[in-house]
Image (cartoon, rainbow, N blue to C red):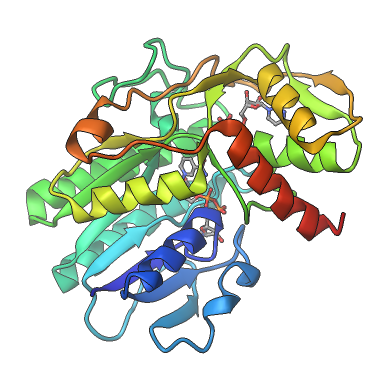
Amino acid sequence: MARVVVTGGAGFLGSHLCDRLLERGDEVVCIDNLVTGSIGNIEHHFGDDRFSFNRHDVSNHIWVPGEVDVVMHLASPASPVDFARIPIQILKVGGLGTHNALGLAKDNDARFFLASTSEVYGDPLVHPQPETYWGNVNPIGPRGVYDESKRFAEAMTMAYHRHHGVEVRVVRIFNTYGPRMRPEDGRVVSNFITQALQGLPITVYGDGSQSRSFCYVDDQIAGQLALLDGDHTGPINIGNDQEFTMLELAEVVIGVTNSSSEITFEPLPVDDPTRRKPDLTEATTKLSWKPTVDLRTGVTATAEHFAGVLGI
Ligand code: NAD
Ligand code: UDP
């Protein structure tokens, strides 16, 4: 049993993490400013005295009364739509927020867990991407605010580890989807499913030949907990290595939802990565973890969630 601070705990991934931590007997202090999260993701824990919620922007000093065993830092908007909408907040939470969360861990002699991203590889020139790849990032493009803030966060985390002796874990998360994503999040799986359920055109950006490898949320959280509990600092890729083009994803979504939607093509965003797929060798050998949920199964569960949210 541990007392775990989860920044970004009211978000999509953070709220699933809070669920799993409470289920296994941990105490959870959730800190979130709700910029992209929601109370609806965590309100089922209100009344549980092992759960508390503090609405706070972690780019400002974080104060948590009492002992802390683990700090899991997930706070950060993650959708490319937000990179254009709130770029400075994203840079601040990746930089100042990570610094504050590391300070909290150091003061408490706590283990620190950083939610990093496959975006540190940018538009990768190596395929699939192993953790040893240094990436191909445009620092001054619209995605740079997110990519560079996460690269800075990794550098800051490793500096606290080497210089201050803080025990750290770094996960590089590859595209993850599932229930509790916001309908208006803007990422591809939530866009396609909400469009298909409403019979609206499915908006494929570019010619749809770009690829991603989609991980279901339950697999993602299991991988993160294996990393947290194990002996490896990382960074370690956690994701699913089944790769799909966006046109293939659109076909899966249309099939699962039995939708009459047609596909339309819209301009490809600037610096949109061409291909992305995790090399999972480290995760499977060091954490004995591997993803188990295939795309069709995960999309089916996610579509049920969105049908409920949209009242369809
Ligand atoms: P999300 O937007 O649902 O969750 C992020 C949460 O952080 C939200 O609840 C938001 O309100 C909160 N937050 C943002 N800035 C904050 C601040 N300054 N102070 C306090 N709270 C703040 O997104 P998500 O998909 O759940 O992502 C969670 C984490 O995982 C992020 O760090 C993201 O970069 C990382 N990640 C996610 C994916 C993915 O595919 N879902 C991929 C790579 C990395
Ligand atoms: N995409 C798309 N239609 C949409 C939203 C996204 O074709 O409505 C594409 C986007 O251009 C990218 C891929 O889907 O190539 C994944 O986008 P997402 O925003 O989910 O995450 P990314 O991996 O780019 O951060």
